[in-house]
Image 1 (tube, rainbow, N blue to C red):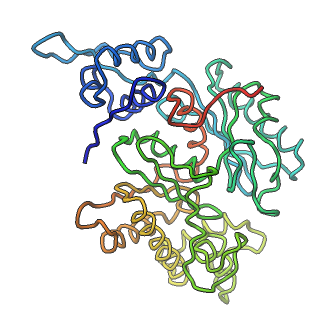
Image 2 (image 1 turned 45 degrees about the vertical axis):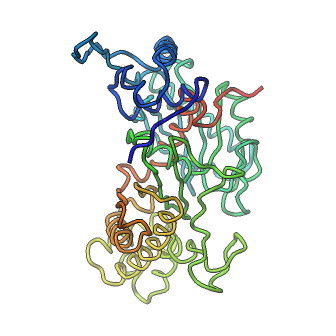
Image 3 (image 1 turned 135 degrees about the vertical axis):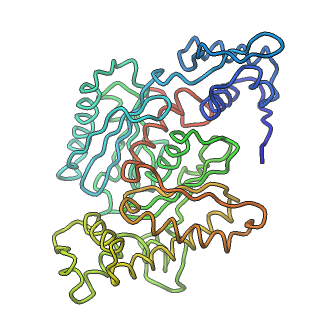
Amino acid sequence: MARRESAAAGPGSRALIVDLIRSSGPISRVELVKVTGLTQPTISNIVRRLIDDGVVRETGDTVATRGKPRTMLVINSRAAYGVGIHMGADTLTCVVTDTRGGTVGRQLVAGPADGRPAEVVARLAALYRDVTDGLGLPPQSVAGMAVVGPGPVDVVRGGFLAPAGLLPQAGLDLADALTSRLGVPVLVDSDSAAAAVGEFWGRQVSRERTFGCLYMNSGIGSGVVLDGALHRGASSNAGKIGHIAVVRDGEPCYCGNRGCLEQYAAPRVLVGRARAVPGLADRLRIRSEDPDDRAFDVLARAAIYGDEDARALVDESAALLAEGAVTLANLWDLDTLVLAGPGFAVAGSIYVTEIRRRLARQAFTRDMHGVRVDLSSNPRDAAAIGGAALVLQGSVAPGHGPQVAARA
């Protein structure tokens, strides 16, 4: 069901036009007038500025009409590049994308040996330089960098507020420290929020969609994009669906709640349960020293290939996550949901199938519309790609994304 846009002229209109060209292009100026309700002079002025800035280009193609042929517009994929770095449990993943969200470079390295601020900043800065220099990107072509990881985050200060032991660099003002060292704008955000924006931006999803992303890595989170903009909440920490209670008076969680979804469905929990099943870890060759993420890949692969014990654990996780998906869909009246994150990299098909089945049966609006459920095309890198998308959205479509500007 289409929604007619009625944004007034101004910075928000630029974001609106960029978003429409991004998701609908090639598109003509006349079509932009019809879709937005803005006047033809307003559209012409905005498009002219976007072309002058290099964000939009004319394709050279025209559509024949009874009057003057209509010139088509598309996003210029080389207008700017965004850099996203995802901070995992023991690795750093750096991805560079073009303006349309296409990946142009990727590098995976070991994370800092400890959480000392100087070491963290130095490692992130070195990774940024290695990747951008290796791609031969002129400094002026890079819109900025985003560092993303498990929340909660303080996006205003530019740092993580994770509990002790989950993220060693908690309390470090990463954005200021990295901007001072690199001379580029730096954002800090949660991995689930970044993944939501990345999937929305890279898939060329229409702003008419009510778009949701369910993200699973060490924990479980989500993000919702409404009218082209991420819903952030009062402190930019919305979407913590992993902390809804699914078991009354259940296992205590570090968030202060009990029975949280994360405590029963997250990969690290399933790995712990697999190790507690007599003989299962040995049979699957899960070693005691294996990190949880690697051990979960082994468990998920066994589930895919028919190991009954492994499949039972993954099926239980999928059933609980499907309950979370129904809650998410009912709260926001979603029409699109994408599953992203390393937790879905191997057994994503099991989760997609169960979530589709549950939504078709239990979504509140199932008699009015379905909810499209897809798996990310790149679950492992979704957060890093999303970090780059956050930068690009804030740079080329200000008003929809975070403000991208170098700090003083």
